[in-house]
Length: 300
Image: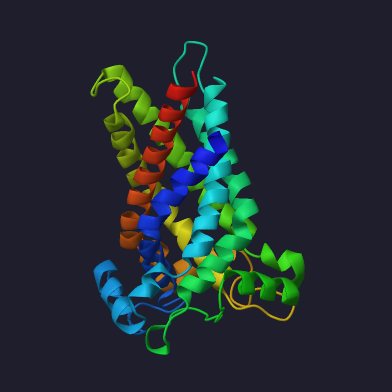
């Protein structure tokens, strides 16, 4: 049930935040490996990107890649939050004095995140491809022109085999390790502190909401550079063998981006990341916490 509740919580959040994921993906691919001022900026900021995509691609385009996004959230977060929940319920995150250990919490969050992200990597890659697809006049990054999730998975598997489906998976893991450990550690620690300080009534939904808000800020700051690079590794064009034509791997992508686009290139789309990751973190952790509370209340 922990895994099911975790997956459902993440899907509930995804329905609200997927349009921001579309905007974030395109802003991260805009001006890829080009010096600032040498390319046309189709998306000037989050709000301009919303208007531009809605006007040129149509309003439905703001929910591009929704099917793989929901499936990825269910798989990745079902495994991630479910595993973390089991470890937490088993008492492995607390010291002998009964206090929460930030180190154990971060390690458990990172390990749980890696498991979920690696298994869901092919879905995430296809989601990135679909969300990057746009009308020629506002297109950024490589355009794969997939017809849908199943067609894309089938096409990649036929062309590059099963190995091709996991292209970019290793490069995407640091993003998840940093994001997952930061998110779950700060959420659990903040929730623990607020309970100790009795800021809100015991078992109040406000405790989970406030803890999730703090967690969202921490995740955005820590994860954005790795998120930018992960998006680019997944979306880069490939040769006949399925090898990336722009980047050799994570470190190469980080160095190339920093060298050509500067430090701000590493934080492209941070506004969209905040507006997306913040609400997504808040909603998914809030839904997860409330579902667990209801479940354990009625099964005792």
